[in-house]
Length: 319
Length: 145
Image (cartoon, rainbow over all chains, first blue to last red):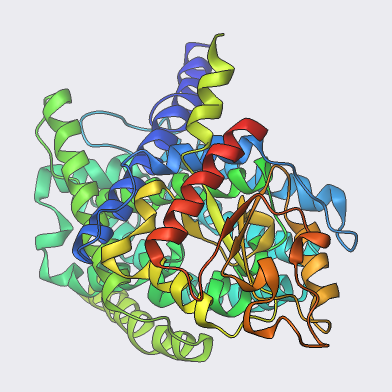
C-alpha cells in the first residue's frame, strides 16, 4: 500500500507532476531569455512560460467544424498523462530511484513515443490540411529518430548487463548504479558513438529548430497545433515542458549519472547537468541553425545517428 | 478579491500577436516585423510572441485598407481568433484608406466591418508607435478578460 502511495506521489508531485511541470516551464523561460541575450535583445521575463499557460486558461476553446470533437479535445490529455508517468520513471542519482513496479527503460521508450503520436492524431483530428501535413512530417521524423533511440537504449542495456554478469538489463536503477560503481558511460570510449547519437536524437524528439519540421510556424502554421486554442493548447505546452524534463533526464541517467551520495548535492549536480544539456543542446543549436526540410532531416537521421547507434551497438556487443 | 484578479493580471503579460494583411502595401508589415525582430525594439520583453495561427492570438494587428478581394478572407480570419481579443489597426490605411482612399477597390475605413480598439496612424508608423499601440491594447485586453 505504501508502495502505491509512493508511486502516486512520484507521478503527481516529484519527480513527475508538479515538479517536472514547474522545472520544464522554468527551463523554457531560461531558454528564451538566454536566446534573447545572445541576440542582444532584452528578452521576456523568466516566468514567461507560466504566464503563457495562465493566459491560455482564460481563452475560449474553439472546435473546428471539420474536427472530430472527442478526439480533438481529449488526445492532449493522453499525452500529458503519459509524460507524467514517464517523468516518474527517470531516476535522479542519489535523490530518486523509480519503483520497479512502474516500469523500466523499455516502458519509458514506449511512453516517449506517445507525445509524437498524440501530435499526429491531434493534427489529423483537427481536419485542417496543415494538420495533415504536420501529421505526415511528424511520422517521417519519428521513423527517422526512433530507430537510433532504441539502438542507443539497447547498447546501454547490454553494456550494463554484461558488466553486471548477465546479458542485458533494462532497469534504469541498475544502469545508474552500475555507472556509479564503474564510472559514467560518457567517459567510456566504447559508448561514445551512442552518446553522439543521443545528442542528435534529443533535439529532434523535442522539436528544436533544425528538426521542428512538423510544427514549423512559417511553413505549416504550427501544423498539428494550428486549430488548437485556449486550455487545450495549454495542455500541449504542458506536454512539451514535461517531455523536455523526461528526455534530458533520460540522457543524464543513461550516460552521466555520476553525482555525490548526499541528497542535496546530488540534486544540485542534476540541475546543473540539465541546464548544461539544455543550453548547449537546445538553445545554442536552435539559434545557430536554420530549419531542415523533412527529406534532409530524414536522410540525415538515417545517415549519421543511425550509423552511430548501430556502430555503438556492434562495438558494445563485440567488446 | 483573492486569486482571480491576480491571475488576470498575470495573463495579460502574455499577449500573442497575429498579423492580418488586409491589402497593405507591405510597408507597415515590414515595420511590424522589425518591431519584433530587431534587438533595438525587442517586443518579446512585453511577453509578446508572433504566432502563426489565428487561433493562438490575443492581439490582432491589421494593416492595409481592406481591399474588396481580400474582405471575405479577412472577416473569416477575424472570426477564427478566440475571444477575448483586441484589434489594433496599424498605419493610416485602415483609418482612411491612405494613399489608396479614392480607389474603387478599397473598402476603408476598416471599422465598418471589424471593431477596431486602437489606431496607430502613420505611413508607415514608427516601431515605437506600434509598440505603444500594443501596450495600449494590452490595457484594453485586461479589462476584457
